Amino acid sequence: MNTPTFACCALVLSAALLSTTTVASPLADRLERPSRLTAKAQYAPLIDVQRVGDQLVMVGADGHILSRKADGRVEQAKVPVDLLLTAVHFVDDRQGWAVGHDGVVLHSDDAGASWTPQLDGRTINALMLEWAQSEVERLQAAPTVDEQALESARFALDDISAGAEAGPARPLLDVWFRNAREGWVVGAYGAVLHTTDGGNTWTIVASLDNPDRLHLNSVLGLANGDLLIAGEGGRLYRQSAGHWQPAQVLTPASLYKLTQLRDGQVLAMGFGGALFSSQDDGQHWQAATLPSATSLYGAEQLADNSVLLTGQAGLLHSKDLQHFRILQPRNKAVWLGAAALPDGALALVGNRGLRLLGREEIQEYLR
Image 1 (tube, one colour):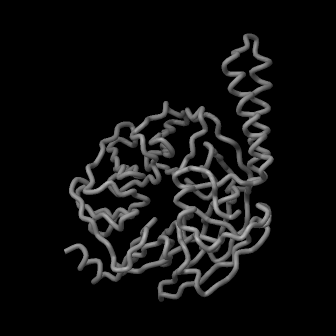
Image 2 (cartoon, helix red, strand yellow):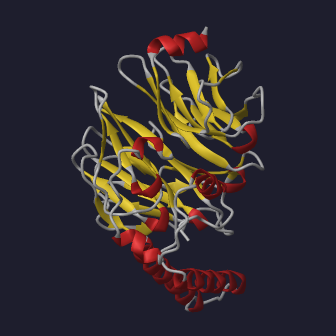
Image 3 (cartoon, helix red, strand yellow):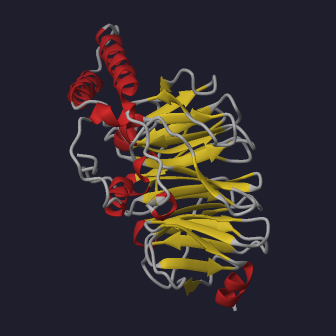
């Protein structure tokens, strides 16, 4: 089935948005079947959006990748896979990556006009099996055998082997690149992979404090060089000076998105109205009190430095991250992301596709 069936918060969200892909087909087919071009792509579910130069790049259901040009035209790129894409990240006006279900990583070097595959769940399965087998062998060969660690490694090997039998069904949920060479992807069952050659080769990152292999939903590099990863069970992981710190648990609810504001403040948000801010690059966090327990999926800082949060119940706007106003555009939808445009307009993406709010309309909402 094309609809996911396991209970990761981000995966459940994706499944809820997908109502158009219910025809059964072998998992591998989606990695080999190009996305279908359709004039209705901008109205289908879109999961993530990023402003790239003077245009927008959006990803979503059925392998759709769309570009909205400065003149308002929306073009659909030719994409080599037909599956849910969950995140997109460009490091400059040309180099970008998109990730999605079945462990797919796609790369573009022409501002999103065309895309080539760099990784998929079959390769991830092989990398994970290789890592798990080497970990068992390393522990067995140690002068003093740590029986508990060896038992855990054997369990991981069995678990990864069983997962590999299901095929390339390892959803990736977020991607972030420091530059055109070094980047990370994260996803279901604690998957973290790292590349230092622009995505041509990848290695498994196994040094997080995540023995239960909880799902990881968001990855973000900070201005000071630290790396943050957030996910299931409110867990947050921070790599500083090349070393992973012990996991922090901010909330019982799952964290869905990380973002850094212009002043360096970091936000972590997620299900059940979870919103946390950090003034010291993720070392310490403060919880915000929201007017409702709506789930939050994204954030965009506007030109006046106020923050717009996207979520299950519409939009939340705040000038100080202490007081919030609930906004709901006329066509109600689940909004997953937003991107401000140079002319002051705002693009929203969600379960109903792309929605544009003009500058005057935004001012009307914010009065």
